[in-house]
Image 1 (spheres, rainbow, N blue to C red):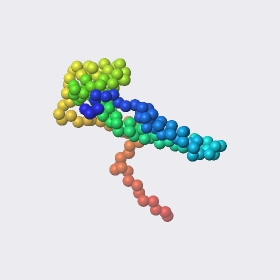
Image 2: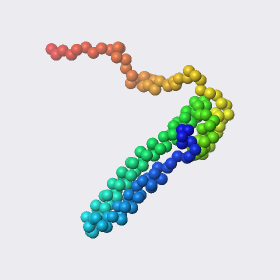
Image 3: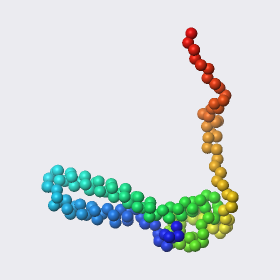
Image 4: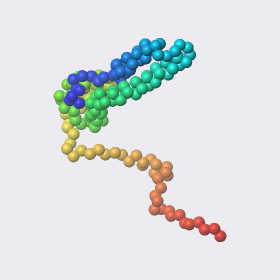
Length: 159
């Protein structure tokens, strides 16, 4: 996070435009030279452009995730702060361009909650562990969870 905190995250469309559009331009320019005229050439060029766009979208999505990994990590930490009420992000990162950029794109109520958490300055306790609720408790009430020890099956014998 500290390496990329001085810049906002890069958009996926910007990466797509910078990586795929030059290749598409070259395909269109050179399609007249290498592909014959007519429906066959038109279909071949269309399929080539379609394949390039699909490959370019996939490639730019991979680069987007790799380049913006610090922003995703910071967003994860911000969501943890908002849900737990504990401060885990340092003041140095809070004043960064990346933090402000992410904060501006959140709803107003979320921003107000984060500001109250920051003002409170309650640090995360040292031995803190996450506790999760029992997600299967509702299944027991409707009879979906059965105990295996309650009933044993008897072997079936034909007479």
